[in-house]
Image (tube, rainbow, N blue to C red):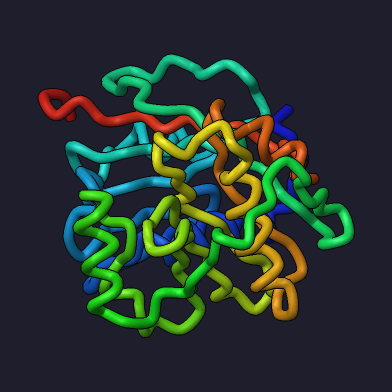
Length: 242
């Protein structure tokens, strides 16, 4: 029997929060039972088409593949990734949730008055940050988008990390995404420090926080008070098979 350690409402909010964080102009979303189909207005990385499904939605996808190539993210209670015909496993993550701000374990491993968290609301600053990291650290389309807040952490005037959070659902759950620390600043507790700041900034309007954690970040989020609720396996459709 398929049982997730997370409510369907919270799972729904996570998927919609992730879509909101990755939004590009012209994005469309089609929702069916056990399946959410997303077509981004233009590619996010190399993603243009993406499916979010539970195991109950697999048969629906296999009966009629909607497009090729595409990404498929399976949300499951099983720890091992199943093999899916004509797909290859691209990445795996843990679906984690912090349900009460009181459970947030503040890190004591990093303290510095020099580290400042800045919400990005200016296009010039956003472009400078993106140029510095040589990454799409700040989504320029989302600077003025309601329900999306993007942050950059500075060491004096040097950007050292970034992240964003969506709080677009009426449930007041928020989804953290794109948490990143410059490799030269890792293993100093900055990942925890960055997440703490973002969570505390959003706390007055948020009741719980959801995110997809990599293996590298898993222990960090556990220490902060998040709990693992499900496993996320992301597959890519082989372009020569439909």
